[in-house]
Length: 628
Image 1 (tube, one colour):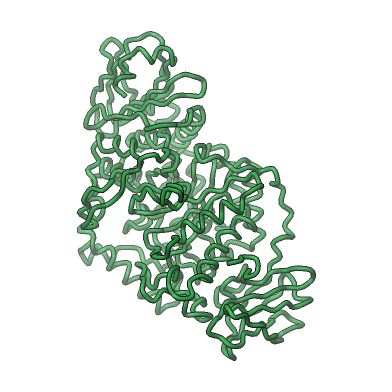
Image 2 (cartoon, rainbow, N blue to C red):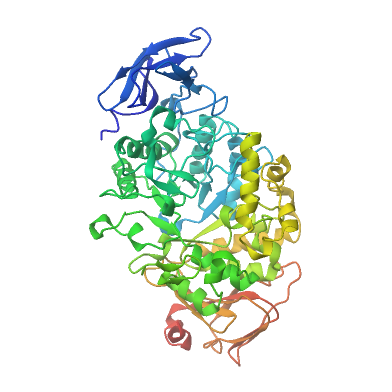
């Protein structure tokens, strides 16, 4: 399908606006202009055989409001609207995206192996909850050492606040965060500071309130496939080609009109497509094609629980050619190791050092073994996939927000243990993702929150309780009654980061620790093979990384308890300690491990990490090399 000839939405061109909507079952679509001076004027559109209705209206320009009338019904907002200034049920607004004065023409993007993601929710990242306020924090993120900001979905949604996964206007930045140019200014500023911007997009379902796509055509939804959130999107049924076009145009517009550097595809395991070429393969191919000759790097990364190697394998090998995939397995093993979680999907993970090391070497843990939680084999062998193509994390919006009380791991374990786990995350060669505030061990929770109308809100609140009741620890009705109501305004406001706490102890020491680890990470060479990591004991791991200056780093990480670990090679004279997680600069109450070079051992008083640096020439002849 020719994307240019079927460019849906309102496009400003040569002193006029071209309107185009796909409504194959509708005989007459009219553009209804709602701007003062044109109030109520309706203009019929010309229908093509494929069901696209188009019209070019001179004098209708940026800022004008419009809706569509369908065979006399409506008017309804545009399913491809670029902005909904009065909310998802209100009129759409014409946006001339070409007028923005970009300053990033020389911006090349960030190579995948250099990406450190920082996931944030625009509405809770700052007190103001806007693109403009978030932009003011970009210098902080650069100083922290991350290289890519990942925005949770910004496509407009019903109500005043939402995670973004109930989006219904996927082309329109949420008006509560600002206008389209505010988002463009955010991206332009990020690029000026050397930060990439990735955007979370949702193509597995549409939200429950304000999704007008099916008003224009019933073919937007699949007649055979369902998602966990309702009807699935029609990627393979009758009249699916325009729907595929709708999604691909959405992806391309974020890249072209907002200059985003990457797309995080939400829950791709919930996208069902039995067509000869999967929609994800088509999308990845079109994104790659759109970048030809630009010199820009744009990455497409999936969130998927299935551990499918084909997602990142080239199409010539039967794959979908995505750039990367999230790996939940690392998080689940770590959470089990640190906090003992065993409910739900955590039952499939034991948190042992040996299995954490195995997960780090492979990229994910399940490669075809039987999963008790899923009741079937899970995963494939990830051979040939680079470490940087796996996204590892200790926290993300789901793994915090889908807990009943929005607790982060560092709310459940002590800071010494949190520093040890953070060392592992940030020194592994996989692409790390931080969730906003984890770098200073933020005290704020991150709850699930919505702002639906009263009837739908009651259903959401009850559905939330029903979902959480499946966990043994939450089955009691009294416990369920204490779970914060996702519809309550206080639930949303409690999630806003408290930036002042990052300036005082014990958070300030944690922030310094994260900055030091991220600075150290930048000195490491890209991993061109399987990560060199092994378990030393039930509680400890040994990680070896090459640095770009020819030296070698050796990280000894103890995740639980106290104890002594033997490290072959520590008797030599030319090693040095790069850092410990118990240095006074990083721990408000330091309990430094004891280095026993004569015994080739490190004695930990509590969980922690020690990072050594060795000359590469020496490392080749020590026992450390053979250990890894």
